Length: 585
Image 1 (cartoon, helix red, strand yellow):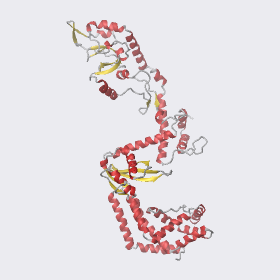
Image 2 (image 1 turned 180 degrees about the horizontal axis):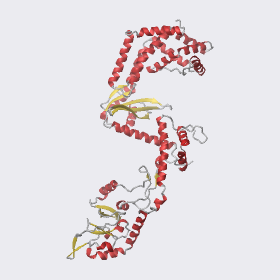
Image 3 (image 1 turned 60 degrees about the horizontal axis):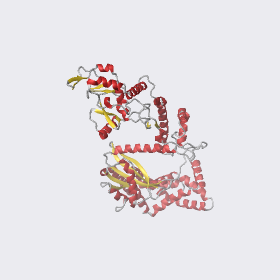
């Protein structure tokens, strides 16, 4: 299989020879120019070094006078010509002045005469230097060219005729005239261009084809990234049924746009741009552009740093970093990257966070806060990450995530009551009981039999540290209570461990206390879910955060005091639910 070229190498091609002015022609080395990446104007040929680079070259290396420009180097000596002379594609500069400047030569006043233009068509006159030059030799000098008509020009008007006759008969001048005529013939309006241009006459069409192909490849890669789906497949061979999202999407688009597949067939096998390496390069380029955009939005803005640890599917420890700032009057949170963290110490994690933030070139004095979890390695007041990072961001204040803090407070408060702990243990046992393949299958079948008009639902597993996960578990059990009781009653008629576990769960669920706790926590979760989700909002400000927490506290106190009869309402619902499911206890 041919080795796949990189994304950048795909666009490299020989530059086409183009029209150049005299400055660029003499500064360019002979032979083919180096390859270039066509990322600018479609169908246009490349140009010579820019005026900016030319000016820098002059200023730094040669220090010319303002009225001169470099043309060539003859015998390792740099030669300068006046700026009022013609470029290569222009006709010779032959101004027809009413009176030319006079010069005293041999006691007589001598000056240039316009009649010389007719006799020697190759000469051109510089008003700046009051001298004549040879246009052909100035642009196409030979190694042994006499520099009289190139360097400084010829000013001895008394002997100008003899000097021009001698120069016109010289071999270097004849060669220069041939080269100038050849240049004009290959760059004229009716010309076919140089040999190199003719060989690459289809270059604009090739560039356009390549651009259209890259657009399709890039759009597919960006779509997969946006949908957060992998690009590669387990097997990408020709006989594979599923070659992965990237190749399958490419095949799907080719089905309705045959030109996509046709372009792919025209490309060399090592430059199809559908290899894994190119996919990675495209995603890295997109990430780089996104970071530059975030950097521009962050410029001059106060910001806060958010970071958290997590594990990927490969069980690697990673650190995700986000920045929170205001742009255009809107609070924004932007993920700026994640990096593997082998060292989980405070110093190691801090280095990884700084590594992710480095490309943004943030102003340390504009950082106003950190937001991490409450783990000691992050929140420690002596050697935690927040202490290490404060050495780089001295004005930042550490804030423990308020949503996480609320979860921990509610979970800790619930554990203070033995009845509540027992209730959530039963909730967890119900979920575990129906995870078995046979039990789960029968659980789904009973749902369809009892509620044929409703979509089947799954039970949720509660977490010990996330209050919001308990909310989902409790609400699902309340909604599926009749199905759970029916499935447990059926399992209780079996034998073995299944029978024992089912009977134990039925005994614990068919009690007034369990039904009451189920309805009670459904009511409590309705209030806490609003605050928990609200605190996770990326646009929430500090005052709104305080308001949410205070409102939740007042709601719970009001419920406890039964100021609005909510507690009595839960008791009535408990009696109704027990009667509905024939629960006697």
